[in-house]
Image (tube, rainbow, N blue to C red; front, side):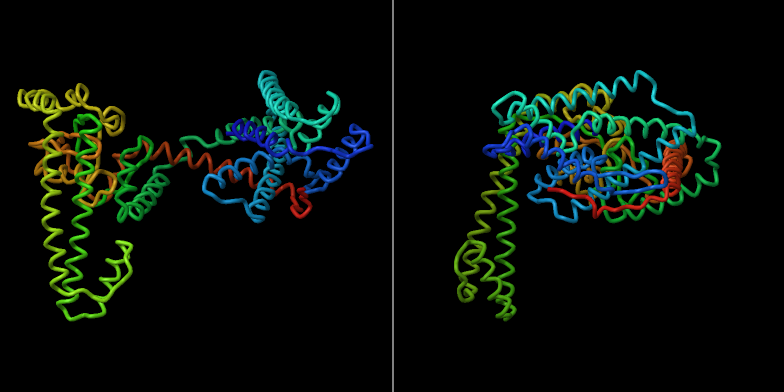
Length: 479
């Protein structure tokens, strides 16, 4: 990620600085640029943090600031937003605090006798040189000036303005490497012996409570977790089963015809329901409700709201809508039949092999076109499905829930937006807490990693506090 920050910052330099330049008449441009550089160095000399034994200036953090600013600016732009003054202040605070952490880490490395080896130092110096040269070449190519010397000086000034110097880039790379080295050293102070069974039991109890809160009313969160090879789930909601399926994909136009036809049916059903609600309101002598229903119908058809319609007018529309819906349903059935017919040779072959006793998993491997059935953990687990599922296509969910007992296979293929499915009811899922022994090893490893991370975070916080830092973010000056 740090390399992405740096490379993006290099591009931002070009975009932000290419329009800047000195167009003063009668002034030696080199001299003027030297004065500009001196003024910028003075501006960046402000102390933004002090600690026992030293201080940090704006110059020390400008490279990191610009990288984070550029990244955040791009991120916000993706969503049509711009960084606010508070956002910028937050970035300033973050980079200054990070600089103090880097000081604390360097001091601890000395105390612990840790240092980067010669190969690592050479590597990060080479990376810093490469990044600097990329930025320099890009900016120099667009720099204004009558001579090479003037363009070179302008490039130097503009790069410095962004905090882009060889030393700054090296410091960023070095700080990252130092952090990784000392974190590994400190994390090593926590061993498996430090995680007792009592502590693991507490971690398990906490995780069960956390998972119940997370998954009880969020089927998509649960289903996503059970499709992940890294999530440890300790609590199962009610009503779930696992299924596996063999996906056969028809031609795209054949499948889209089914999807379009089903969408048309759903839309028509909604319109018919609105008409029936309008008629019910009128028949209930609820004039206000009838008027509101009429206004809503008018708004939906971009027509100006009129007085409530008569029951006869509404009924006529209902009759027409019912007839239209019947036609749309017939069209959807025809599209579905055509879709199934287009893959019938394949699905018939699969059903025959199942009847002959061939293994369902082997047939998934041979015929299936769903990557989820080819990759772990869903290859082994299957998909977790309930009537409340929101992750899966509703037709796939319905087809999965129609199966009556474990081992049942859908008698006819199910069509979803993904294709044609032959589904098998794989297993029942027992609701409630998962037994600790079933997740013991994975939870032990996860809890140990958390302990290691917490230990390092605690140590780093203590090292920083020992420096007695004082922050002066108000001294951060931007043009």
